[in-house]
Length: 291
Image (cartoon, rainbow, N blue to C red; front, side, top):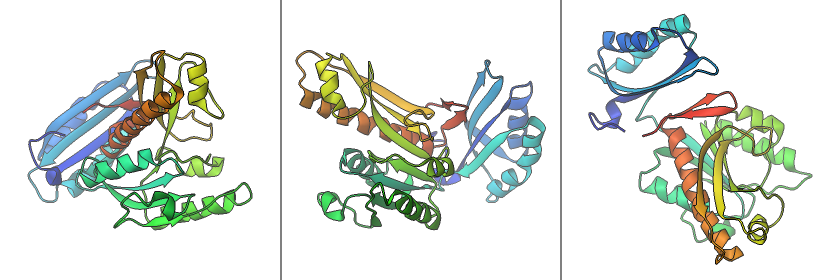
């Protein structure tokens, strides 16, 4: 994030619209006309879909700059048929984490949150295992909800999760190795605001013991993919990916260990990108502006 001013003085504008001349000039002139100073601006023109994407970080000299900019921007947005968001940087997004037995991603998110690397407000941790399964983790100051699930109770359990999301005004749901497939209905409700992490292999292996399968096939690369959740399992718009090279010396347990490390860092990067409004949906893909 630019250092020209403190985060309390900064605002993030994101937008997408059909590409045409004058968009950048229009946005820049509008912000200048409201006493704003652009600190960072990134843009991308998808020539295949003729769609323009932009992310602007700016500050202003007036205390009421947010209300002034937000209040009148809709007129410019209508002119260019924009889909847009505007948020004060200091306004942290509210995040709920869902977790199952494997807690390495959860532990990593908690650490990054506590040291201030992930600017978010944790609304709750929801697990389908009891609190005792995570006794080694520090949940102080965080609401914990044990919501067991079975095939027979899945709909009821998801109803409880959705109720929690609404009651806590959660902005983003993170599936930190939550080993349950969300229903089509819940996936639709969380469109564009639910991030999942899963392993990625070349070639792909599904089902039980994927790392054992990968070892048996002599895989040379393992990886992880963070994506937005959709009704199509593991097929949502990709936010972040990474890989790591594997050698013939690596045993299945080495693949598991290295896989945990990749999953942790890929999920953390994806969450941070979302928290900083760096991700804009582009159909079945995403545009991710770098830092």
